[in-house]
Length: 314
Image 1 (cartoon, helix red, strand yellow):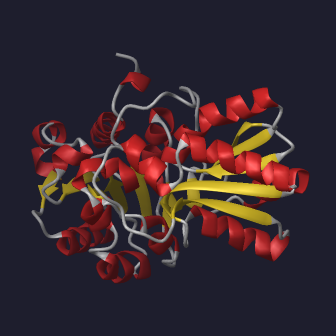
Image 2 (cartoon, helix red, strand yellow; image 1 turned 135 degrees about the horizontal axis):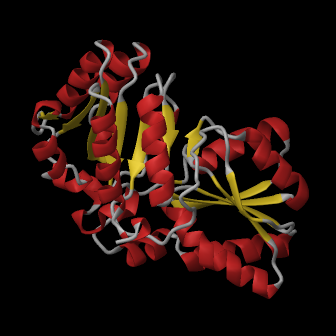
């Protein structure tokens, strides 16, 4: 099986196994959801002395991870996105970010990808609250190649870091030579009419609409941000100085996440009109990913329509 034919969570597990084989300080922690992130049973069986399941106790998950990091270990701790962020936010703030313990937090099934688990498990705030935390870095890989490179980068980093983990199979965007750099956004398609900014899942959503729009004569410059914090300011500004208008799309609330980061940068440096696609300050609901993306307003159709609208307005 080719790498891009695998589920992203399987590649997360593959990469952790490689890292744990190379470095005896790398450890894996779970909070009773190892099947969700893909580490159970493989890592539990391969490294029983370096796999820790703390049970349904996410605050404890963060505290234990902080202690391990303080003693020189490299802890990767994963659970569903709302539990990895909202539920344990104070423990992350004090024990990890404030103490600058280089814990690697993984939020599995971000946003609408939790699908039929419904609103309680559908976190639309994690990018906003994690990027608002001092010392914390925030990553959203879009395919298996970027995911693998991001996990390897995190293992070598001495920073507290949070990463969204999409679990399912998605088409490749990059290739074997991809190297993650949190300071570098990726211009996937050049254009001069509209700047489209995406991250994680919405980068996947945007690929086909951008192709269709180019065929219509609307030259969309599509920028993928693998890191929401730190944020590559220069790539955004270079694009916006050409296009003069921006559309953002994210698997999040429109308040405080990717769209918020874009608006903050532009208000300080080059004010232009921005249209933000995402959940419009509401909770999610039960449904599959296509239904939810359309209901919440950031589907492939919504991305195309927003770019057309902004081009016409210009």
